[in-house]
Image 1 (cartoon, helix red, strand yellow):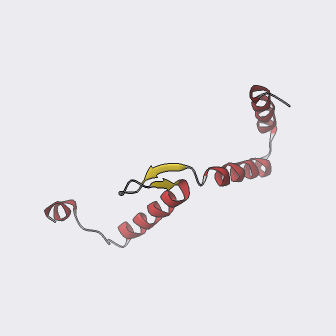
Image 2 (tube, one colour):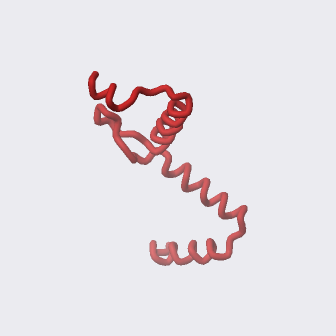
Image 3 (tube, one colour):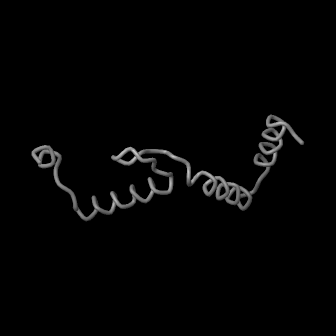
Length: 78
């Protein structure tokens, strides 16, 4: 079995010669692998995965586009 250093070097060698198809496959593997990684926390302190965080950002962006929000000053008054 290869050591981590040997394996990293071998993979880097492959990546340096890879075409777009292989790079997209590797990218997908890493995206799927890390989607359940905790990257933030909900207001109640529970962990938020990368996937949940992305969904929350997408939802927030849609709300901003629809102007579905209240100004900070109004929020502070509440």
